[in-house]
Image (cartoon, rainbow over all chains, first blue to last red; front, side):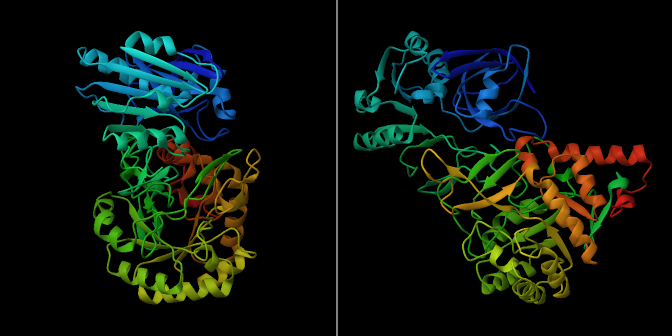
Length: 234
Length: 300
């Protein structure tokens, strides 16, 4: 169980929650569950790490069902069952970085942006954020990026120049990832995708989150969630 | 922990808690959380002769206190299991159950022949997977077809044979009796219950296969009832499973007559569910002054 240090609404049905002593690296996630032991809801929800401060992961999640609704009601000092850190995460490379996030898919990109800036201050960091409705946390990204463009209601990938070199990373709805993959392949650009999937275990045991790749089935939770775009079949 | 010492089909286990097939991979996935060697046994992911990529579309869907799954037996196949997975699974000091399903009688026979020469402790024959078309569960629905596949596999495989039954058969007790008569050394039940979910926003079934298998605490009373009935009807050992999440749940199945139990879905919610259940059973024996947990087996 992890203690809630902060849990507040930062956008339309979007919450940011800080949990004590939950270490992580950029791109990883935790299975979070509002209660301990057997009961209802039964399973954890895979929630992306948005940031990590002094060993406490800060999570960003959208309320979409009963599990996340109960998480959103947690107050400072309450406890949450937390399994993690899980997944492979993003590599930190000494190269210019372009990040593309759609909706709640912006979540795993912030920590990557922050760590990249800390390790490679001389490199350029460009961020493209797409929202279907009201935007959120755009200023947090803008403060750490050399350029930050926000797209509301359109196709964020249309704003992106895929020919600038360096490493591109994207997370968001599947149509967005598909478009990014297509453009990256056209420009021969290195693109990493952070995939989302329904999960039961989060540790690679249940095979509930398998995705098809050129190398056969892979588990989003254990082999991912970050995959080279050219590898995955979307 | 001699109080939990368990004999299952001639195999000595340090406790009666076995990781259920399809919930524990090939034994390595939970190593970061606990030593899998603490378990009495581990049942492998369900294997088929040639392997399978599994089902497309949504594969897991939570229900009230339950989990619907439609994985579809994604697995590397029997030969690949023997070559790649078995050596490292064998290094875990727990009883090794190899779970195998099939799409045809020939598949079952060939798989059993290959496993005959492999270093496993128990062959758990899956005639109950609800998630593959024209396979698995089809064999477990009627006494005659279930007995036929058991008889054929028994003739080809020297390992103790544990037959995993479906709760979806019209008469589970009749299938259990037929499987016993066909030479099964033990039974495990229940596999998942056939269930369904509909996505009302999309006006369609959640799963591509429409139906899926339900597990988790929601099914425990149903599974317990079937285990109790079958234990009264057969004289071979029974491994009870279906929704066990705590040591108390495990105890229910032992009191209903089971020799051992399997846990699965509970480990998804809490990776430590099985080691906690083992500790709880141990503490129960001490509190109750039991020299061995099996003193309470079948007392209900």
